[in-house]
Each structure stands twice: as C-alpha cells, then as structure tokens.
Amino acid sequence: MAICPECEFEIDVDEYDVDRGDIVECGNCGTNLEVVGLNPIEFDVASDDEDDEELDEDDLDEGGDEPDEDDE
Image 1 (cartoon, rainbow, N blue to C red):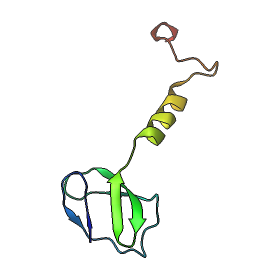
Image 2 (cartoon, rainbow, N blue to C red; image 1 turned 180 degrees about the vertical axis):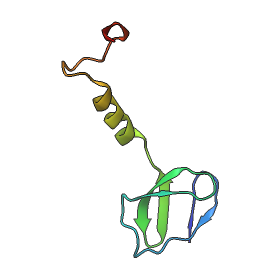
Image 3 (cartoon, rainbow, N blue to C red; image 1 turned 60 degrees about the vertical axis):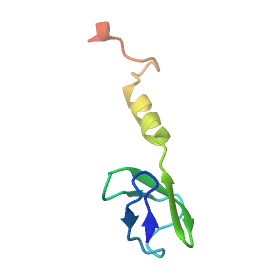
C-alpha cells in the first residue's frame, strides 16, 4: 500500500509492477502521481512539465512561431 500525498487515499500498488518515474493516477482524487520510492512505494505529485512541452510543440507553426489568430 502507498498513500496519495494529495488526499491520503491508500493506493494498492505492487512494487514489482512499477518503477521509479512511473506515473500512477490516484483512484480517489485523480491526481497524477510519480513513483519516487520503491521500498516502500512512495509517491509525489507528478509535474505537468512534460505535458506542457508537448502542447507547446504542437501549437507552433512551421516557422517556429506561435500561430496568430489572423493567420486563419
């Protein structure tokens, strides 16, 4: 068992099913949690940096600039 740092919900995760850096969603509050420890399993709230970077790259046009509303 591991504890969600946001809502203190007990999450049943087998230490053999996860690795450090894996993302697990809390079944109670829906927060994305990063596995930071394995014995015992410990979670920290996952940062959204990776998602933000993916969105930023997708929003850029071919010229490397952000699209203007006038370009439509």
